[in-house]
Image (cartoon, rainbow, N blue to C red; front, side, top):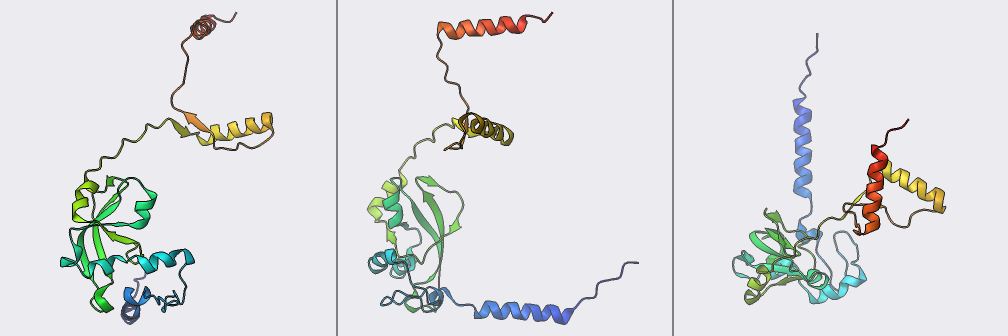
Length: 219
């Protein structure tokens, strides 16, 4: 007979209370990502920002620093990042659909935002939470340039011409190369999906000879 498991109501209630206290006492984003601009340290963790980020921290803005002074906190507007403008020729941006501001933060410059991401000209269909809102490289796209960002048509992706070898064939190819060449391949071997064949007389002659050999029967 299976013994019934006893419900430990008091222990379960204590666990829920501990989880609620941890959730209540966790630092807010305004405390977690606060920054002392003189020492470039975060007071909550004591960590110093990388030296390469100091210039952007002093010149650029966080996302909610821009949203705090805008009508409806920038819902419907287009925002991009300095790193995207420098690293990609295709437009990458967020179009905000929802903003939740932390009203307890000083100047209301912290919170969460949601929107539709277009990365390197490819728009995603689902609404997602905007990440890295605390980074100091956000920029507002002017209204007269929004349509220019949206009208971009991405180039079609090139067809796949090479694929990785199956594990067994890859191991055989590496072993054969090690036996013949006595070393390790510098690059990962790839299997071509198309054969580049030059249609010459020698090619057709070799094909005919191969057919004749296959048609012959062994005596």
